[in-house]
Length: 304
Image (tube, rainbow, N blue to C red):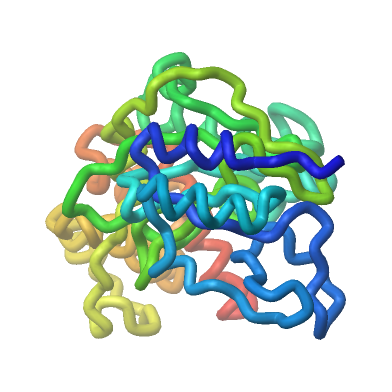
């Protein structure tokens, strides 16, 4: 017998979240044959028409009851933007060495070849000075693929980035873009498995370090990040990093490190000088990782 998910839709609305129906487990697109059980609901089962979820999402219980009476097995999706949510999606490992070639490759030396999204999030929490126990003290849902969704309240008036903090392992759904993102709610089920609430905790505010990591950053001025050229002016590059505005500091650091590499400066010298300019106290692991990444990038471009 097909499960009726209306109670899960109502439970989400009672938390103040805007919901809309997604296709039930195993639904296939009539045209392509692809499984679309995480996509907005097909109004007519034999036609590939989907609802406009950004417009449909609602907290109106009468509308929710009407929708799930029509489609009792429809999965329950939560629209993050109108719900004021940032959901951090920690995915499972997709294979050995997944972080190779990224600033987080050293995690394989520490944890082995298989690193999942929760491992990476813990590392980010430590890197940015957060508290892991506090971070986990919020409403959490285990996904159908045995990943983890952590729910946070997002600051009003601030736009979240659509970019993944660590592509393939740590993703976010928030209010970025035209409509924001969405996640399947607890109680939903896909061909990969059920979505299960790990607790019934209240949703806590996103901690400041997570807000800084996930907020949309201003686009850098195009001229600032032109192709690095040999300058020989290390003091100027150091001043550029030290005086860069908050939204451009990481980009300025990356650009300056590429210039250092192009000038043939030893990477440890670059880390020492630029990391100190970036942090004001030197030795910051995030800054050092960015410098190393910039050196790898520039070396590939110059065939070094």
